[in-house]
Image (tube, rainbow, N blue to C red; front, side, top):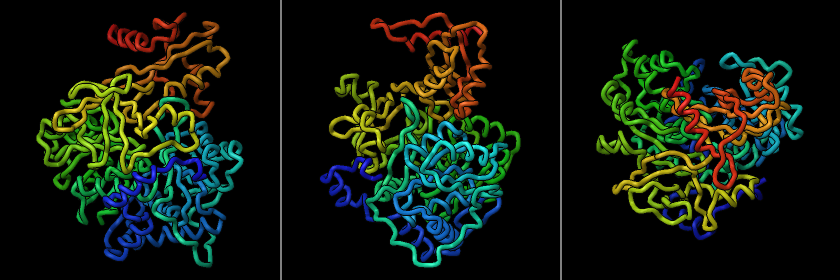
Length: 537
């Protein structure tokens, strides 16, 4: 498996170790050390759990022995699709201990995506909850089992049915094998993807723990910190910026909230005396309105992070004025680079920029269409490389040739400008991708699914503006017969197992597409078209 991962060139790896970014530390080392230092301190809180660091380590050890007894070994991929619960972290640390490789699926993913992840990573196991948010993941697992020849086990949190229950795994009686080394791949995150299905992002213990350690320091975390995880726990933002793992690294407490509604989340803040929380932009005005209505005690909350999509300055100002907290903007990607506004930045920087990189060795270029640097303050394409930014996706050589420059810079697909102080301002996306409230949708992936319908001649999916989510998706479709309607296509996509958030929010039927000067579909004109229709309505 690891032969399909692109390593950092040896001179870069040596530099990152020499400068202390990579310390030879693994996730297992981190948990063991936290148990030694403060084993009885509260580590994780969720709906049905209150675990100390020692409790978390004991549960991770039990699961590791159970997984090993099932035959899960080093470098075996395991797709993990769990809601926000304490068991999510226990499963992670169990797999880390064995050197098995979690693939972090998100709760909205359905059969199309999960089947792809299992096949692409040749996963041997799939971990799910029995039900969450009204959806039965055991039904999903049954469908996936028929699609992935490598899949041997489905492990279920809750009522397992014909599968294996996480709380009833047979224990391995002997010694576990040695844990992995720090320079080995620890897990796979998912790309936002601008072409096809999401790519797998290999992250090592060394590079990810540097990002986590530096993030925890930038965000001022310590043993008294209480982090509220309300966005999906498997999302990179929720894990590492500084997220749940950053909070554990600092010796603090992670509160995992399975219900993302503001009424539930604000109650958690009051009850557990949360000090820092992270949101995507669409949740912020909903929280602000709920806080004004419910008037909970939010006096413990010191920092509210907002990331995952562009955040407008007016709503940012509302956070500061109405909640009385420090706002921290976060702009990053699962491939690596993360930027923060600092806690002591001037208000203007916090309101109107997305911050600056974590590391002195984060190399950032802002270039034009021909990869030439633009003048300071001008908008261009963001390219980056550094001690925690990958050099290639897993098993994707053709895509890697497009996504990375010959000298190893990652083409993020973001359009940014850089202020004289070095802060980045995100101006949009160059990739053919829709950012639906922080959920990235690859237009090409949805187009491929629509084209599988017998009545669809051609289609083009574009972003359309939305006051709440920032962007929604609109599919322009050329159909064979007028009898096919939008609900027919929506039902077709659902039956194919496409995640709900990827299904077009709007479908427009057209006779032809506008074209560019070279005869390609003009998605720019289609975006202008749907904006005009929305304005007229």
